[in-house]
Image (tube, rainbow, N blue to C red; front, side):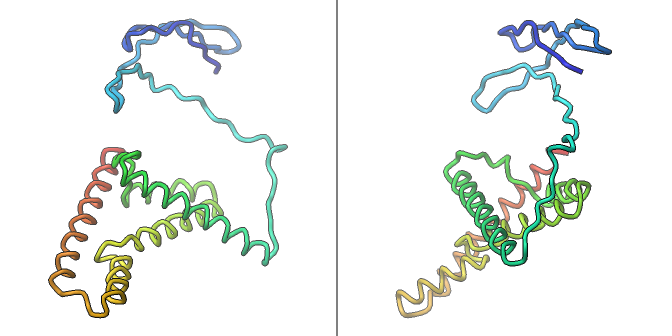
Length: 195
């Protein structure tokens, strides 16, 4: 089905004339969109229409195989790309370029695993690798309670030549625990709002 919008008006709830091809014949109908508010306060019309994506033609498909040595190099390069992406997203999350509504929890991970499993074993294993690398990076964030926090305390001990005082460690664990718990609650809340 092909569609073309003949008229878009300034008011997001204004009716729009929509022409579609049905059985190779043009059919004109009126569409009255609902409205959706963006983060910057603007209100736009929203119809919930998305194109249907067909399968790739056979001429565009190919099998990509590597030998054992070349596969290791490709795997390291791909892991590096995932690390770069994860670190850049963490930076954007910290500075506010990416909103907290982009955090996902266990429900989204399970849905993603199910979706990739439907596409086949290779996609499913790729998704598991992505999650594993992400969790590894997150675990190295210098928050007490995570391995990154322990490494931070060890580095401080190496510099000051004595153990970090227990009260400082305890305070760090409380603050780190509160941050991690808050992020988990936000991620789970986001999961439920996407259901």
